[in-house]
Image (cartoon, rainbow, N blue to C red):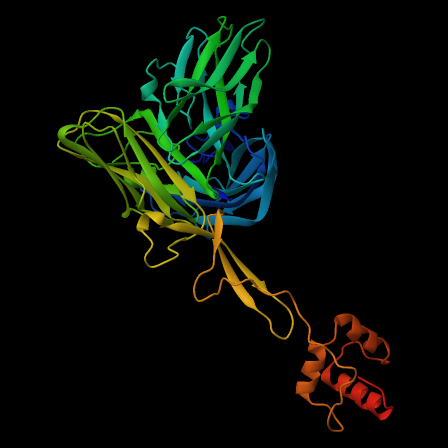
Length: 518
């Protein structure tokens, strides 16, 4: 299982000072460190690698730093530099670190640091991405950006990811996000910038599913500033609506900021979530606009390049959409996943009285350095609404195991296994692992069980014709004698360390002249 973290946002790097931002983006670069809100909390242990970054100018065009200018961008763990970094200079607008990697433990706090060099003159807007391989297969990691919590607001709701800054909404529907695949949400982490107070003063964070509390609750009480729930797990289905509920218990003494992280364990191997949608992301009822595919807190925009996210090789599938209000009779919304500024086949149309829709058939194959986003097109001036989106990402090509297989039954190839047996009658067989759930043998490869390694039966003595054995006989002899037997022979031949054809021939001739077997 490998998860691709696609990140970035329309925020320029600070060209004058060292600055910091969250690992998953969607937070302005700031010169303050530690910046509580600009930290990503990992709820999953694993390895972070394959750091890719791209710089663009104010028009969205690729731009390298000018001569003598540099940007050194480093991944930090607990405010300490790691070896995972890229140095962008005048040579290129794109840089990748495929050599270094960072081991991450559950609960680690990660961010990005950028150090400008050479006094850059112009603003650059970065996009970046990572590959994350969890220690436990099928787990994936998600982040909730820091936001303000007020002690005087006893209860409110905020989106599952990426923002905790709107817990003051008493309308849960404004922040409910939609899930694209079944699995379990678990391992909740919560950090506060200050303690709740003393005694029974507390803040709670509870996972909500389809408008009801679940048993996944993180509680922070008194002088504590962090908490976890590593025990409870919540089973979710595709199409479920989820969010977090914040509760202030016993009127806490302090207002503060909160950030969080959680894990998702997919039912199907090699799948993870893209989650998006925010109450501030109001759809435009008259013109086509664009939105990021995952964890976006910006408004929709007519400039598509401002919504691009920087991808690595993956497949997008199972696109779910929810709008907060039905379009109305004869009206509709069309939502489409876009790649590099062009339509993919993934599209959902929501019409009339509907508020949800999905495309479970079409997929989009994405390569390293591709851009991803969502397009919204209104028809007939639909009712004002906000949009919420869920989709699945997976690693591996999508193939059909049979020409007659229905499109909806496509499977992902996650491994190719080659089997073979030793001996003169070797059998070679390729097994294709699909989705990690079962194995299939694809024609013309036979599904027969391969035999155990076998050796030819040796007679008591072999008479080699002619004074000098042939190459064919040399091959037959090697096939019927073990490596231990060959090494034993070499030990008796002075100066020989490899049983070459010439050495073997001389040995055979010598044995035969003495009337001995070979």
